[in-house]
Amino acid sequence: MSSEDTLNFAVIGCGGVTLQNHLPGLALCPEVKVVALCDADAATLERARQQTGVSVTCTRHEDIVKREDIHAVIIATPNFTHRSIALDAIAHGKHVLCEKPLALNHADAQAMAEAADRAGVRHMTAFTYRFVPAMRYLAQLVKRGDLGQPYHYRSCRLQDWGTRNLGWRQVKKLAGTGELGDMLSHRIDFAHLLIGPMKRLVANLKQWLPVRGGQPNDLDDWAAVLAEFQNGATGVLESSKLASGRNESWRSLDCVEINGSARSFVFITGEWNKLQTGKAGGPGLETIMIPEDFWKVPGAPRDPHQGDPLVTFRYDQVWEFVDAIRNQRPCIPSFHDGARAQAVMDAALESAETRQWMELRQLRDGIKRVVRGL
Ligand SMILES: NC(=O)c1ccc[n+]([C@@H]2O[C@H](COP(=O)([O-])OP(=O)(O)OC[C@H]3O[C@@H](n4cnc5c(N)ncnc54)[C@H](O)[C@@H]3O)[C@@H](O)[C@H]2O)c1
Image 1: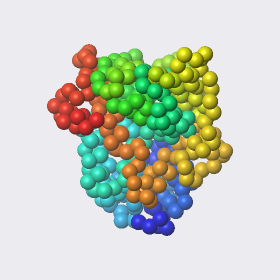
Image 2: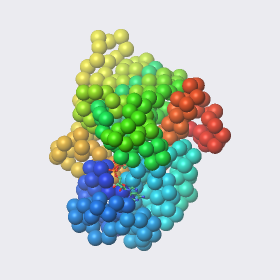
Image 3: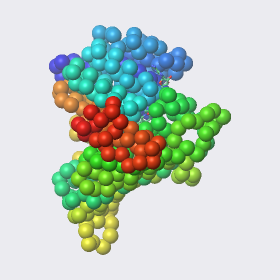
Image 4: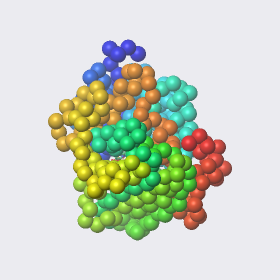
């Protein structure tokens, strides 16, 4: 495809994250057109149609992915649908950006990554928080060696979602896991990005509320992982929906601290343009500002001075997808990154069930083979 060609997109799933992240991100991209919308719920579909003016609408993804005028799809549906929609889209040669968690288990996520590779299409997992300017800058400092030998990775995600009904998010067969896949998956991805693959872990999950908003909840409200990485570093990851008084989304706590032989860094999503850092033996942490070059992904069409930066960084995600399609290069993060996070989630689930440490190379049979590739 030449760079002059317009890229035609379909968006499958027109709920919360599509309205907040994907459609505004796509609207900024030059030579990109949303030509079709799909949602299983007719009322949601109609609302999205009215907001966007997109004329092709459909309640079945099968009718969308077979259209020849569509080059790429975004899948933003409940977790249990990701695998089948993605495989159908890939079978029709579409490039795919799929929401996280990529699938319900590692075997499915790996199958999606392998199918996309075989088909030669671009594939991307929506680990949106990689696009926070401070995280992109931190990843670069770590890659440059500023951390020294990595000692510790620590992430803490504390929100107050109260007792309300979470819809499909509180049903195991629709969501797979609760807080583990919903929020901890992003922080597992941070750990992979900053420190590398995990070697072993022990995990615990806690469900406080068997009923949410009058409906059964069969999933975890809290998840924690204690990990050892292949490079010897330690990891402590905690995430909760029940940190009363902590507020939600970017108004709540999302913190990562890494300590290495040379220095430490602290990242807080709410402070998108700052990091805290201190050098070994130094007087304590100081705040450094993120250089303006990092306020958006290079080449991204948005003006980083426009809008709320805690919302607008999310628009860079779809730009990464578009740029990878145009330049025929792998997306970062890809389905393989989604599958790696899923392997850790599988191990965490199994650890919580069996009350045992899990070696990431010694999971139950179906996973054993593919986890070796980590
Ligand atoms: N990357 C992020 O930061 C982020 C943020 C929020 C949600 N998410 C992920 O995005 C996905 C969607 O979450 P949401 O909050 O937008 O949920 P949502 O419930 O608001 O929207 C999902 C939509 O999908 C539709 N749908 C269900 N099954 C469908 C099917 N088979 N075909 C077409 N449409 C279907 C529903 O009718 C609904 O409108 C989930 O996987 C979630 O984990 C990611």
